[in-house]
Length: 149
Image (cartoon, rainbow, N blue to C red; front, top):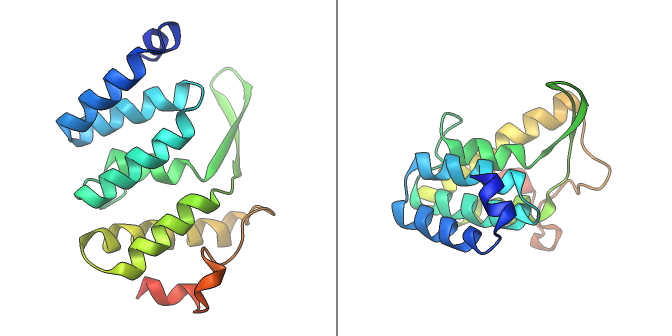
């Protein structure tokens, strides 16, 4: 599927539209994999992942959209055949969007809190990228961890 989209870029909007209409975890998984493999897919993965949170399709680590969003915070550097070196990667815009949802309350807040809490555990264990700010939205003026409770 990714090869078809790379060969004919006009197919990407059709695939995205089809997956959005399907609105299922399996469509999220397919679209996440394809967007990972095509140029310019990062912004769309962020958009699709946030849509999945808002629709209740990213509630836990077992859901494809949840994993897709968490994957946006890691950089996999190929080291050879089927081997990667994994490094933490900043995605400040996504953290800010998750923080906004976590503060807003409602159903999407639970998923956003879960992702932010999981990410913070990862950061404490493996380190924080130098270009990642500690507070997802410094203009907020509140301790960011308040959004987690």
